[in-house]
Image (cartoon, rainbow, N blue to C red; front, side, top):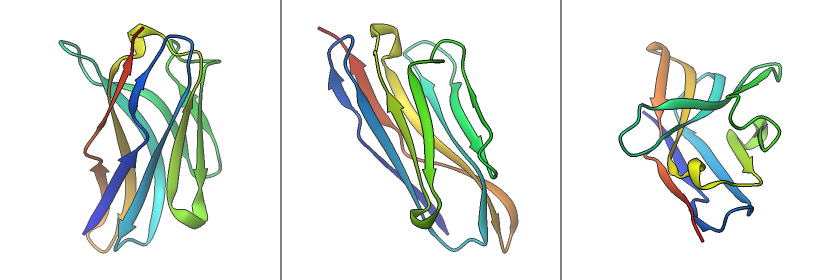
Length: 119
């Protein structure tokens, strides 16, 4: 079994910063890709940022220049540094990762962490 555990969400004022963390644990051979999604009330879940092995990253247009995804391979952890936060960034943020396991290639999701941007 594989687990993704997120941390770092909370309440922040507009213009502020937060860093989300997502640590993977359990039984797997390797991590192919990791990323962050978010879902605001009444909206569909959307990709915020992703990173594949080798370091290639991609970002939603709405967060380019403000958010940075990074990964610590030794800790099997992915981070999302969020700067210049706006009220429209308010959402539940979910970690997502693609693993190679004994059962094949499998996608797992974290439980989600709430980010609220408000004055």
